Length: 390
Image 1 (cartoon, rainbow, N blue to C red):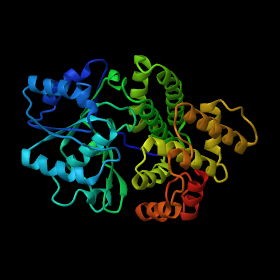
Image 2 (image 1 turned 180 degrees about the vertical axis):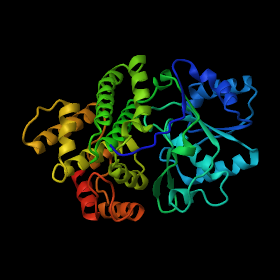
Image 3 (image 1 turned 135 degrees about the vertical axis):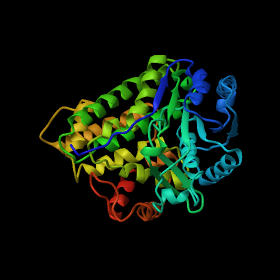
Image 4 (image 1 turned 60 degrees about the vertical axis):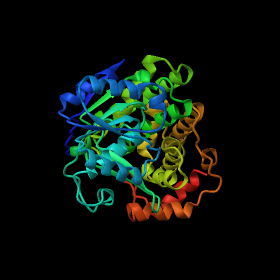
């Protein structure tokens, strides 16, 4: 196991009706004025936004609002938020929504105290050393952004989708998590969230670091829980137990717990970011296409952990033929994705003829000559993986 620092200061307030505590929590963390960031109309139609506003008003917390955050969030909304924050003297961001809303709030939080262009952080030109506080009322279990210091934004000019990791300053101070808020999620959105949280775990699980048995078992156990609860929630969308377990799994998947002490991979995420940047597909759906393709390529190049995953997560019988074991595990993963309504090929994703050369060129322009760690991918390798997803 490698040396590591694990820092996870977020206060998680979990359970029924917890959104009513938002005002008291904002007060607890010393905010003088907050900006509520939200997406489309669902938080308005459900009455959630009104309940959050009422809680803030009862606590005497002044606020302004920024709505209209879209899936695959974009830089133009971040610039709008930065300008509004400075004008209104905001000192805390309150994201009411899912990953796109939280990621936008984090980007604004980093950009407000910075003299330059917030995009400098995403291209590695500058490092985030200070930011406004971020808090969350979560509505979609998927991205895990409520418990991480990560944010992903797409630059409209050039369709460049990049991630920023700043756990020391961008982890939310608190996250309100009421599983009941997820009852009305459409089945496809629920399924995409399931794929996203599974991918967050697998990016950490597929590592060459030795002696990470505790990490392996945390990953495997959480994956097994997700698979079990996914089957239930697709049939019973208002099953509180299933929704609660999935919501907490999404947090565990990405708050760093599953990856301590190991070198992580992240190639599949980077491969997918290009797809959702260029074709504007849902991130989780892109991952359900790319991850099995990446794993299939790995059966020829670094099969050991893929085979272990097949045995421990999907119950494939052990055999001396590790490649056959691994391929059977991948087949079961794809069958699972299909069973919850997710695509496993570009065609099923709605992309008949993907421009693979463009995807590859953009990937390696953004991420360098070699991508990932489990096996470092050169351009030709990335191209083969995209082709395996056809």
